[in-house]
Length: 394
Image 1 (cartoon, rainbow, N blue to C red):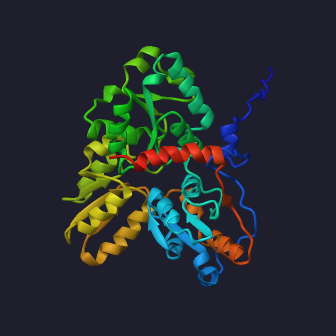
Image 2 (cartoon, rainbow, N blue to C red; image 1 turned 60 degrees about the vertical axis):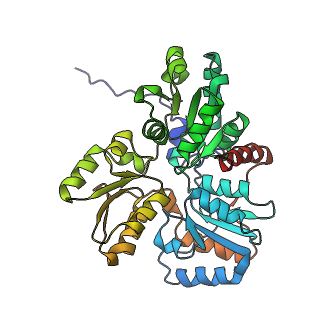
Image 3 (cartoon, rainbow, N blue to C red; image 1 turned 90 degrees about the horizontal axis):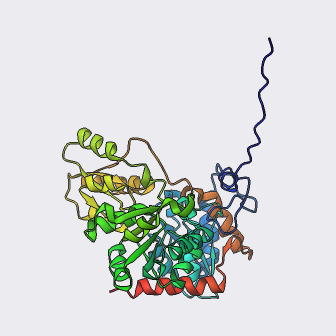
């Protein structure tokens, strides 16, 4: 009797798998895998003093932006904090700053570069700080999708609307094809505008924000929305489905907000009687439908500021922000908890840590420009067109 020998399977990793493993790099992707330079040790007890000294040496030449989801150790050095678009606009309002150090992720730094002057240089302390959602829509995939819509005979009826959480390439595609950008705060206005221009919307890249806005705010049905999967032929859709739909949603999502589910909501209501459930519109539709309040990051912050003392809140958004808000309002006897029992930070946002920030600031203070984010002129022109359409929304 012989024993069959295991056969070696000729399976080659896909480019995406290699990218996720950190073994390849895609210059058109949001995710990098290398950070040049020698970083200080994360255990260096002098990191705070070093960051402060480098920032003081740079003076008005540097303007540090901190996204709400950043670690506290980084936020303490931010000149302003906010969501991605607010920070990009804040950068544009500081033309005297030669260096814009963006403590956020890659697409945010791209937006800052698009909106600031040519004389200003945008720096991302760690090039590996990307966005999984933005990675879910590449320029090639979206161009192929448009070909599918053209073959179905509906491209002329479709207006692209891209979420701010997208690469400069996707923003440029949107501008070139007559569309606009939106944030989680103005998605309803952006969709109303788009439906005045055409009969259908291609919403990129977050399916949940698109679906929630269409159903909750515009009164559409779930049947009006279909999901285009870029990894399947024709997006996994028939021509009839494409022609019947009003909202063509890209198959993308936020890795943090997508983890919340209906069980999370039901569980927190059982554990904390009288709790108010407040979630971001990037959450799944079932979560949004079950929540008491839904809104952008800025909406969440303002809602908690206005909340009465003694109130209880379960927040469905990134943990760094939730923890910061819980600490901030503890003195007012506001109980604030994370919606899910499983602790989950935004892993790519958390790549911007104190060692990377110190390295970037000290390099700039020594006259060495590092990790500059620069969008090419053609891409910038069309992306800016899409952003300007958003700014002109009624």
